[in-house]
Amino acid sequence: MKLVLFDFDGTITNRDTLFVFTRFAVGNFKFLTGMLVLFPLLAIHKVGAFNSHVTKEIFLTYFFKGIDQAVFQNKCNEFCRSILPNLIRKDAYQAIQVHQQAGDKLVIVSASPQNWITPWANPEGIQVISTRLAFNEGSFTGKLNGANCNGAEKVNRIKKELDLQVFDKIIAYGDSSGDAEMFQLAHESYFKTFK
Image 1 (cartoon, one colour):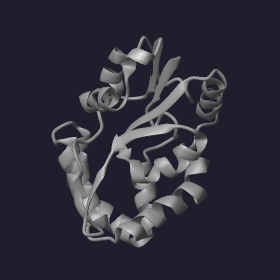
Image 2 (cartoon, rainbow, N blue to C red):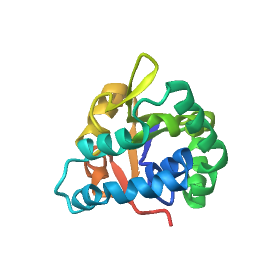
Image 3 (spheres, rainbow, N blue to C red):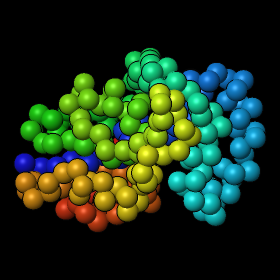
């Protein structure tokens, strides 16, 4: 059996879902105001001068800290129903179907939180390994539960959650430097394959 690893943002989808989801969840005014406030931080992060884990926590804290877990998940579920299907690259979805028909094991490995990937992926028969959010007493703390699932952490999580010895071949699809370590794990890798 083949194991097929897909990055999510920019690979299966045509853009980063963190920003699209946030705008959907909080509304245009709060999103645009927040982006103005956070712009210096995001700009520093973009040039590689600030840690991704910390940047993501600051971003999520600003928009979502204290939100009720059920309310947050309902927003994620609605996002998957109404917005996410329009962000899926057609050729990526076709590749998913081809691999499924071949009997391959499909796994999305993403830095985005599992909350708005799993409701779309699981009905498609795709396992999700991704960043987890920390909740305490039913509300979001603003923190990540464990490491941001990017770069080397993608491989750590893959090895932790999957028995790689049962697979004859590993194939990986990605679109950024955050997928480099996952590509090294694979026998066959595809960079920015989907348009």
